[in-house]
Structures are given as C-alpha cells and as structure tokens.
Image (cartoon, rainbow, N blue to C red; front, side):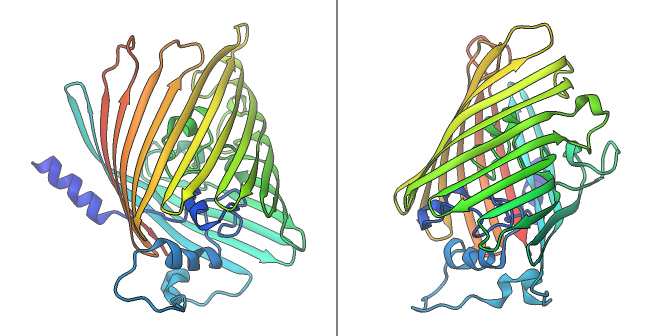
Amino acid sequence: MRQGLLFLLVVVCLVAARAEAFPWMIRHGYASCATCHHDPSGGALLTPYGRAQSELLLAARYGKQKEEEEVSPTTAFLLGAVTLPDWLNLGLSFRGGGLVTRAGDDTDVRPLQMVSDLRANIAVGPVRAGGSVGFVARGARFAALTNFEENNVVSREHWLGLANEDQTLLLRAGRMTLPFGLRTVEHTLWARQLTRTDHNEQQQHGVALAYNIEGLRTEVMAILGNFQLHPDLYRERGYSGYVEWAPFTRAAFGVSSLLTHARYDVVTKRPSFLRQAHGVFARVAPVKPLVFLLEADVLLDRPEGGPLASGYTGLLQVDYELKQGFHLLATAEVLQRPGVHVTALGGWLSFDYFILPQLEVRLDAILSHPGQSAPEPNVLSLLGQLRLSL
C-alpha cells in the first residue's frame, strides 16, 4: 500500500521534458526536424517556431476554437515572463515519474528523476552554438561532468557550429546525439540501446554535417569519442549517419549506418572492440490520425581475436491520435544480440496526453520476453511520467 502511494505521488509530483523528438509529427507534413528543433535531426531544444507548433498542433484543445487562432505568448521561455534577445533561445526541461517492475516473483517500485536541464542555443550571423547543463540523481553516467556515485552534474550536449545563409547546411563540432534511425522519446527501446544512439546519455564528441532541403534530410558525424568518459581506452571512434527521403507529404524512408572502434568496449570490457549497426527506417501516415514508425537494424560486433558476431533489432510503432492532444500508441520490438541465438520480444502499450503546450503526461505498460531458452523471466514494467518544458 505504501509503495503504491509512493508511485502515485511520484507520478503526480515529478516533472519531465517535452522538448524532445516526435517522429510522428510527419502526420502534419513535417518530414524535416530542423523546422522545430535546433538539432537538425530532432530532439533537444525547440525553436520559437517549434514552441508555437506545440500549442497549435500538439496540445489538447478546450472549448470552442477560433478560425484564426494566435499563438499564446506563454509558449515562450518561462511562459513569456522573460523576454530573450533574438540571438538567444533558452529552455528549462524536466522529466520524472515512477516505475513499477515485476520479474518473476520480484517487484520493484522506484521513483525516477531523469532530466532537469537548462538548454540554450545562440545564433549570431552564421555562428550557432548549443548546449545543456543539468542535474541527475541517478544514472546518465556517460553524460556526467562530475564523478560521484549519485547526484551528478551532466551536460548531454554542447557544440559550436556554422550555418549557410539559407539554413540548409549546418556544420557542428562538440558533443551531440548520434545521427541514426528514428529519434524517439522512448530512449530505452532496444533499437536505441543496442545501437547506443539514445539521447539520454549516449551522445559522443565529434564533427557533424547536416543537410536539409524539402523532401531530403541527412546528417553524418565523425565520432571522436565521449570525452566525458574515462579512461580514453573506452572511447569509441568511427562514424554515424543517415539519409532520409520524403517522396510524399506524409511519408519518409531512410537508411542508417554506424561503425565504431574502441580499445576496450565500455559495456562488455572486451579488448579491441569493433561495433557496427546498419539499417532502414520509415515514417508513414496513411491518414492524418494514424502514423506507422518502423526501424530494422543489423548489429555486428567483433572483439579482438574473435569472429564477427551478428544480430538484429527492430521496432514497429503505431501512433493513433484520438483527438488533438490524446495519443494511443502500440509498439512491438524484437532483439537478437550479436552471437546470442535467442530472440527477445517486447511490447509497449502507451497513452500520451498533452495537457498544455508545456505539460505532458504519459503512461506505459511494457512487457519483455527474453526468449524461449533464456533463463530470465518475463519482465512487466509500468511507467508513469510527467513532463514539463518551460
């Protein structure tokens, strides 16, 4: 009883960031992420235009709507209480909630504080700069600036760049999320975890070039290593990139490729580790309320002195917008780890409610089946999140 009350209290009281990537925005004809995000591949800080669209296209509507609706000034930074200069954009992002996990006969209930970040972007002529600084009670160790067991200061991204006059090219250097596959808010999906391309803590330092025009977007990054990870022998070097083509207003198809090498793998601790992921992804809205998101990746690993091991991961997500601000989602995922001939299956059922342009509540029921011959039991997780973006 006390654990249940704790879970409910956490879900109600903690808050979370909504300045993240929603690939299902393609239902509104937004194939390009650079329109609404300072990161050309989506996620992180919203542009002023992106903040406006969060009110016009994402948030639930209450009462009778006007034919020509103006954007509320409260969509700006700190609800419009502070006026920023044109060259500066700021955002406060919070994400937290509660997680109940049951594996076999064991049940675990824990509060989650995932993101408490201040994000900034500067644009002066062709010069661009972006960055974030925040606090995390537990986790996100690969993004940490401090080195404590708990309660660390983190910086998930910080970069300096140059843009051309028509904003189609952006060259950046610094710490950035790897360009690969679908950039989704569900950073714990196997496709994000196994490719190590989630936006929560797996960013890398390097140099990236992005190109965005109508119907085509691409970004390629030379990975120089995560300089917030020590020692250097665990740092990966290589490349990551994707190309996405949108032949129709509400359909886009892409390919991704990633290859890295480290003297020792930070997860397995094996020496001279070569890691690859290559795949395809798609975003299709056959009708406006319904969006299909698909990703399929081949995983290739080779430790020093060992053979090349292959595996795969993939996901299919269906997002149905009941009415503006109310989303039902179903996600199926599959995983076979390289060298492990056991196929794991996962399923998500989710409800997402955009209460206000700045506020979102999400509930997820997640079932993971480790495979017929795996000794681990099925895992059922119930995740509640409350997200706030100011």
